[in-house]
Amino acid sequence: MELYELTVHELKEKLAKKEITIYDITKSYVDRINQKEKEVKAFTNTYLDEALEKANILEEKVENGEERTPYMGIPIGIKDNICTKDKKTTCSSKMLENFVSPYDATVMQKINHENMITLGKLNMDEFAMGASTEYSAFKKTSNPWNLNKVPGGSSGGSAAAVAANMVPWALGSDTGGSIRQPASFCGVVGLKPTYGLVSRYGLVAFASSLDQIGPITKDVEDSALLLNIISGHDPKDTTSAPIEKKDYTKALVNDVKGLRIGIPREYFGQGINEEVKKALENAMETYRKLGATVEECSIDVAEYALATYYIIACAEASSNLGRFDGIRYGYRTKNFDNLKDLYRNSRSEGFGKEVKRRIILGTYVLSSGYYEAYYKKAQKVRTLVKKQFDEAFAKYDVLLTPTSPTVAFDIGTRSNNPLEMYLADICTVSVNIAGLPGISIPCGVDTEGMPIGMQLIGNSFAEETILRAAYTFEQNTKFREKYQPEFKGGVK
View 1 (cartoon, helix red, strand yellow):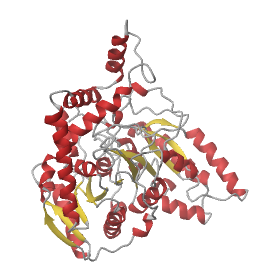
View 2: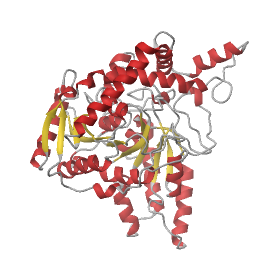
View 3: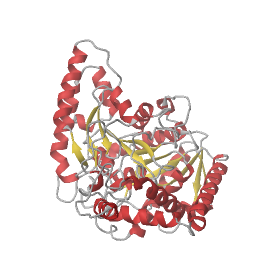
View 4: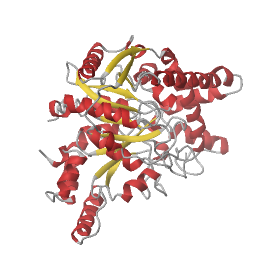
């Protein structure tokens, strides 16, 4: 087995036993990126020479007896909407194509404190608006399981890089499913933490009340390890929750006896692919055999969640993206005669069509005469969604749903149909609306060999519960041992 195929906890174990060096690991991933990036197209920028140089420096420190941080020398990939000091942070947009961040996001400060090695910034849908990574201004990322299919979005670059073994783990962001849905499409693990558990300071905002940074990893144990690093209160983020620091690896117990699992029937209705439904039914049966109680339940307000999400998300996007005006930073048009032209042309030329679509929709629902009818009503429905989840968690420990109604679809089949693209988020958006934690883990493949994801939803700050449920399922099904990306579509 190649080093790049190992999980982070396996790499850490080999480093501790001095079976491998930091340089060995970094070189393995650098070579893998050089081999596969041209087909997968997961990165917006790579720092490969810098990574090898840092690996040598860290190795020298180890040889000199300096104290080793727990994750010293472990490579990582970063979604390109997370600010990295003195490096480009583009959000995969022409608007920020040449923006070099003057500071690090809080999560980057924590990554750097561990002396990890950043291999590059990862492609995404522009400003995190999309479900396929086809809305990047620079390139379309492919799914490593089949290069003709999308990797999901908006964290498609992060999920594809992990699935293709070009990074051992990565950071993504999730506004309405943007970690979990690409994790599902790419057969990896994606965790969206409770809102406020991970600092958003330095995350370029899409929808501030919904955005959350989280890990995309090869397995559940790595997800708990990375959550340990990035979670915690941050005084620089006013929405950061002042809760006690936890060790999430303590939740990794292979036991679900007595766990109460609810199955919301609304998530298994019209539009759910039959093979996805069958894989989820098999997963439910696995949990029953392992001693969990599995019962059908109802969250009937879920049918309004998608409309509620797009009203709130677009309204907040309209507000947040108002700062990109062609004056302070970012893209500036060369074609203007007055201030009004400068604003209009900079934004028209700098933003892609999906971002402009959402800005227009958001501005509309916030405008005089429509605010009450749309935005205010959406906020009321948001309260109802949270209330119904609270009622469900009074009875159940975990809710189990599909992550996506389908497996990964072909590149180009939905990019010109916004409504069909938006429906890809139908199983995930309610988690963000309610501010809850959710994790996607692979639970099988369809007849074409494409991975199917299962979503486990927990109560607020109950990451331990969903990690325990996910870990137990993973240990008893061994997805990674049975299935691996084959790079279909002409690449071996």
